[in-house]
Picture 1 (spheres, helix red, strand yellow):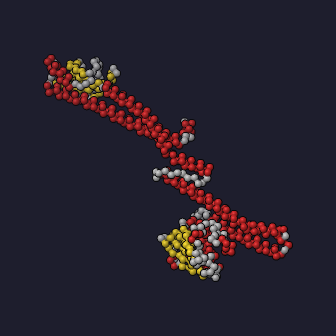
Picture 2 (cartoon, rainbow, N blue to C red):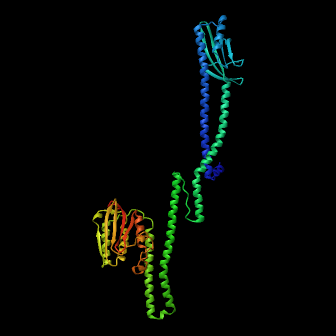
Picture 3 (cartoon, rainbow, N blue to C red):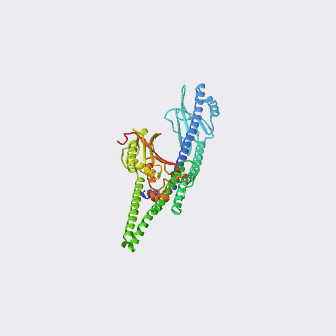
Length: 474
């Protein structure tokens, strides 16, 4: 038994489906045949019994109406009547009280009826086997004046038995055919059901050999298997995008790290060769190295911030942020840090509203957006932060009147390490990670961020975050 169980567990799912579906189809066919066989048999027996009963009623009525004494001249008309009502393969006889035959007629019934068993009650139908013959027997008591006897009708059911046997043989042959057809049908069904899964398996093998660009071909049926394959393709699209983004990230990070490291290495090599004895060269090299180390430190901090932004949400509950108070606080702090800029906060429409993001994360987003506005507004030094509510979402807009962004660059400014003005990036500072960090933080909390800009006129960054009840998380 254990060996059989292990064998079954190690069977491919294709054969399991084939065997189970075949067994189910065979059992259904067998049950249908069994019900049909029983119904036909009972129906034919009932019809035979009905015929015998009709003959018995006709004989009893005839005898009672004519009040025969079953002697002498009465026997000839009785015999003639019984021959008229007698059916094929049937015999009728009248017996006296001692069981002796008085009148007997037969139509196709083999001779020598033998000793027939008597029924317990008159009018009952009994069946018995005798001399390998199927006999259906009905007896009824007959009492007329001084005569007491029994009417006996015997129906030979050999034709019925042969028909049932032939019917059984047909069912057996059909059952064997059903085994074959159910097996073939089960195999076809399993093959059809597993065909999409086989296609997915082949695609995974191709992915292992050729790369992440392979996809499962989708069929025309919009069923659950189609949905599964479509989800698999979407998952592979995301994996491929993530892989390419990670590859691009490594390349960009390597490029950003290469420059300061090369500068520091060059100055140290120069000092080692001859510059350490020249105070002017030594001072210059130390200043340059310290500057590049500060750039490296800033880059590492931004990379860590980006990594934290892409991490999972913090576990447990956290208090929702008050956007009005956060905006006002960030604007006040920015005014101190950048005294030459004019900052404006418009928060009337978000007063009393809470936003579904921790206050620290909202502050980080606003710091990044305001810092970018300050960097790219060298002439018209004005920044406006506005808070409103749109369709159940808190909308925060940071607008400036700076250099703006060309239309061709708008789709890429949220990418990591991307900077619009690369020639001036060294002067402005930063590494092109600020907006990428803001985007990841916003998306972590089911929000969206978009940028609208006109070159030489200014830029507006819009952040949409879900609004929540003010006491959420408190």
